[in-house]
Image (cartoon, rainbow, N blue to C red; front, side, top):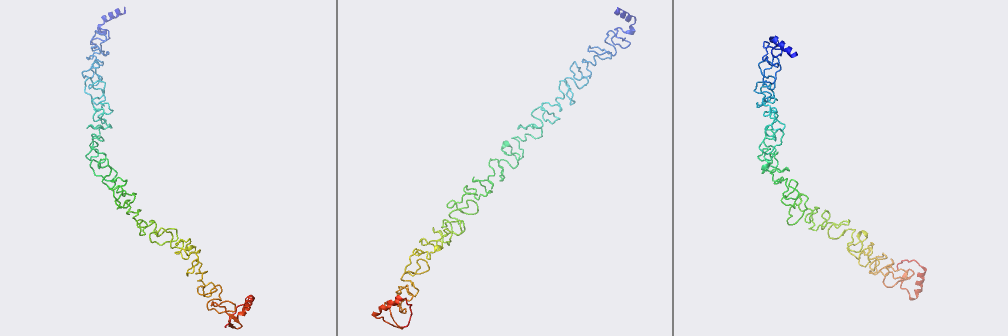
Length: 423
C-alpha cells in the first residue's frame, strides 16, 4: 500500500520529486532520473556511470584515472593522485613507487639496487654489484671495490707505495717505497731488495756466519774463525787478530801477555806476572821467578845446596852442602857449622886464644900460658912447647936436677900460683 501511495504521489508531482524518486529532477540536475543512485552529489560508484552528475564517470573510485595518467587503481595505479605514478612509469628520486611495482626509487641514485646497504647517493660507485660499496674489501679485480677512487689498492696487484712494484711482482713491503726487488740494502734491519736476506753486503750483515758483523766489531767478516769473542790462536792461519780486540795472539804462547819481554814460547813460566821470566831476580815468595824450576833459589829462604838448611835458617854458606848449622867442623879455614867460629875443635883452631893452634905448635891448646916460645913457668909444664919442661930454682931458672922431682910434685899438690920470673 505504501509503494502504491508513493507511486501515485510521484505520478501526481513528477517535476517535483523526480522520476526515480531520488529527490532530484532533471531540472534539479539529475542526469539520469531513471536511476535512483544517480543525482547531483551522489556517491560515485564503480559502475561506469556518472553517479554524481558532474560529467565524470567513476571519479574517486578505483576504476577512475584520477590523476589523468592513463591508469586507474583498478588498472594498477598505486598512487592515482600522482600523475607520475602508474605501472611502467619512470622511477623518480621522490621516495615514491612511481612504476607501481612495490619498490621505491629503484633504478635511481636513492635506491640500493644491489642490496649491499649503500645507494649511489650514499657513495656506492657500482650499485649493480653487491661486492662494491664504501668500506668493501678491495679485491685484485681491476675494480674500485671500496669506492675510494683507487683501484685494487692494498691488494697484491696494486703498487701501493709507488715504487714500480706490487706484491704480485715481488714487492715484499708495498707500503715502503724504498723496498722493492733489486733495491739497494741499507743496513737497517730491513730486506730492501726482497731476496729474503737482510742487510747483505752492508756492515750490518754477518757475511761469514760467525754471529757478528762489521758493525758488531767483526774485523774480518770473511773468516768465520775471526770475530769478537773468538778464541785467539797462533800459528799458520792465525796471523791476525782473531778476537778483534786490536791485539794479535794475546793469550797464546807466542804473546807477551804481561809485558815483561818474554812469552811462554820464549820460556816465561808465568805470562800473567811481570816479575816472572827467565833470568828474573828470585824473591822470598815461594814463586819460581826466574823460570828455572827452582823456587826462591839464591834467597835467604832457599836451601840452595840441599843440605836441609836455608840462609834464613842459619846456613852460612848455602852453596856448599857440607856447611850448615849441623855441619862438621874441619881444619879447612871455613866455618863448617855456621856458629861464627872457624875450625874450632880442630888442630887448626887456637882453642885457648894464645895465638897458636895445635897445627902451629901449641902443645897444650887448652892452656893460654902454653905456646911455642912462651915463657917457662915454675909449673912443671912445657910452656914453650920445646919438649922439655924448665926447672925453677929460686929466682933463677936452671935445669931441674933429677933428684928434685919430688919437689915439683910437692909444688903441684900445694896449688902454688904460677909466677913468671925472668931467668
